[in-house]
Image 1 (cartoon, rainbow, N blue to C red):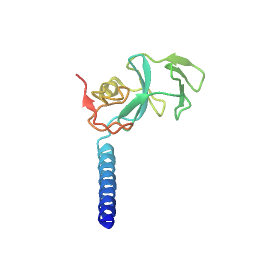
Image 2: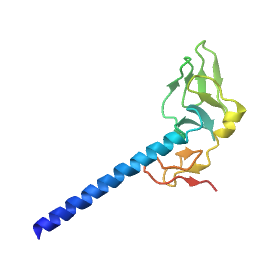
Image 3: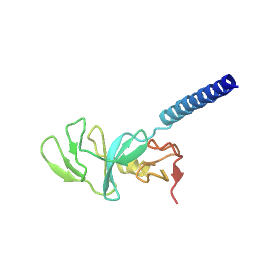
Length: 139
C-alpha cells in the first residue's frame, strides 16, 4: 500500500512538472511570434512606463538609451549634449533614443491588462509576467 501511494505521488508530481514546462514553452513561443512594437519608454497617464516584448510595466529606475539620452522616472530626459526635455502624455522614446512617430504612438495603445496587476498592460492578449493570469481586454 505504501509503495502504491509513493508511486502515485511521484506520478502526479512528474505530470504536473511536465505540464508546467509545456505551458511555459508555448507561452514563450507565442510572445516571440506576436511582438509588434519596439521596446521603448513612454509617458502614459502621467507615469513613465517601459515597454519590453509587448508588455508594459512602470519604469522603476532611470534608463540610458543607446545614443546617450537618459530618461528618468519623472519623465525628464537629458540628451547626450546636455539639453533637457520633459516627456508629455503619449510621448514615446525607443531604446535607441529616437522619439516615436504618431503612428507608433497609436500602436502603443494598451488594450489588455492583468486583473491582479493593473500596471501590467499589453497591446495583445497574453499572460501576466508577474502571476501568469490571462490579460483581459479593457472595458
